Image (cartoon, rainbow, N blue to C red; front, side, top):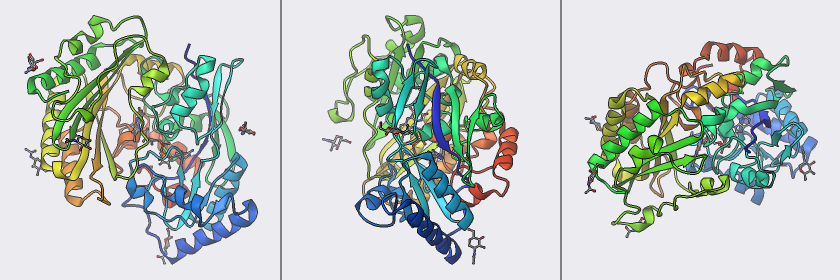
Length: 478
Ligand SMILES: Cc1cc2nc3c(=O)[nH]c(=O)nc-3n(C[C@H](O)[C@H](O)[C@H](O)COP(=O)(O)OP(=O)(O)OC[C@H]3O[C@@H](n4cnc5c(N)ncnc54)[C@H](O)[C@@H]3O)c2cc1C
Ligand SMILES: *[C@@H]1O[C@H](CO)[C@@H](O)[C@H](O)[C@H]1NC(C)=O
Ligand SMILES: *[C@@H]1O[C@H](CO)[C@@H](O)[C@H](O)[C@H]1NC(C)=O
Ligand SMILES: *[C@@H]1O[C@H](CO)[C@@H](O)[C@H](O)[C@H]1NC(C)=O
Ligand SMILES: *[C@@H]1O[C@H](CO)[C@@H](O)[C@H](O)[C@H]1NC(C)=O
Ligand SMILES: *[C@@H]1O[C@H](CO)[C@@H](O)[C@H](O)[C@H]1NC(C)=O
């Protein structure tokens, strides 16, 4: 059986949007130099690096090419949480800017790296273990989900995590193939070791004195086929219908529409924990004529795996590896009520206009739907609730993702304007939360949460000087 209790060493850091983030100046530059000097003498020059091969590899490790163009004043490679505490103490006392990087998959410019500041990189904190007595998994923040699932498979358990990205997923809530039965990935936290901005470490659980922080960290981010338009319409309608009607915790659906170099294709991943794909759940999808690969370019998709039993590792492998690097990446989010089928069709129409307008800019542009069933919302509430606090299930998290062509170093401003228009044209349905891990840095994600006011209060309590908001990039609104 899947087992789902997580103990994660997490480090609460700060937020603000790119636009609000104070620019670097002589003061912040010299603060970073002070922090790095201090840290090199206390932790040594292999844990705290300012140049060299490992430093360079660390500075250019990010998935989004834009986040490979920063030169942190130093990179801290902690081995233990005590190292992280030492680093945060120096960062706090010198007033240095800083950033934290786990699996490196943030699409948001500047969120997992820093110029003229200290970067904390979890390359050497990748332990994962399972304790059958407490039925819980302990993860360190540097592990990636593929590695965690592989290491835990012999025990017959799996973390409620993602595909091949890192533990940063948990900070936005995390949408897993196991979510319909277990809630958001973060709903499964048992205990979190949290280093506060001043370097103090606390362990937060649902019932101890840090229970407010525990709740805030469930969604609070680092603050703390073939073109056939009637087939596409059938796919969008089937997606809305599934989202509205299916409330079976054993069923998982992921629908993605992609435009690769002007060529359109779509993908529906259907998984069921049972012996077959029940027709009453997936029948509408299975009746849409599918072509396994593009007749124009057979490399853009692979034939679907044969229908049959798969291990959780096999399921993850259907999604491919997320390891490719070297392009500028961008995300944006919406959230659509399954009852509003027209909104699904309209979203596709606007996205099609967007991708047609900018097709020459993109190596790939996609729009994906992840249904959030009522069972997922209930599973989260039964586990103590999170700050995302969706009012109900029956809606889909919508992700827009764009990969720029090779050689492009930034999201061009005309494309960003097109994206801003797209977000206006495809707003979230009333009261539905945006998903942090798949949003544009300027979207008001925290403001869309059910427990936004509570999140603000908890932030103010744990970071009264607002150090994190002022010194590290991340979501705004706190
Ligand atoms: C190819 C791809 C597939 C994806 N699939 C899914 C999916 O299936 N489900 C899903 O829910 N999401 C998915 N996402 C979104 C994913 O949740 C986010 O990209 C997430 O931010 C990745 O976390 P990371 O650790 O890899 O990235 P990082 O860039 O290392 O971290 C992300 C953010 O969290 C901060 N952070 C990380 N660790 C810590 C820490 N210990 N303390 C404080 N701050 C920290 C970083 O500063 C950064 O702001 C996917 C993304 C990509 C690119
Ligand atoms: C430099 O930036 C810091 C905050 O990042 C700010 O407090 C300070 O006033 C700035 N100094 C100058 C000289 O602009
Ligand atoms: C992580 O694993 C290594 C190797 O097994 C071990 O030496 C180390 O103590 C572990 N660290 C923690 C924090 O458990
Ligand atoms: C396109 O999709 C529709 C709706 O599913 C289907 O009826 C039709 O046969 C498809 N056309 C082609 C050419 O495949
Ligand atoms: C097919 O697509 C791949 C990936 O986008 C691309 O590298 C390749 O050049 C394409 N081949 C043709 C014949 O268009
Ligand atoms: C299509 O997208 C372009 C680029 O964002 C925009 O200028 C135009 O107004 C859009 N058209 C419609 C009908 O939305």
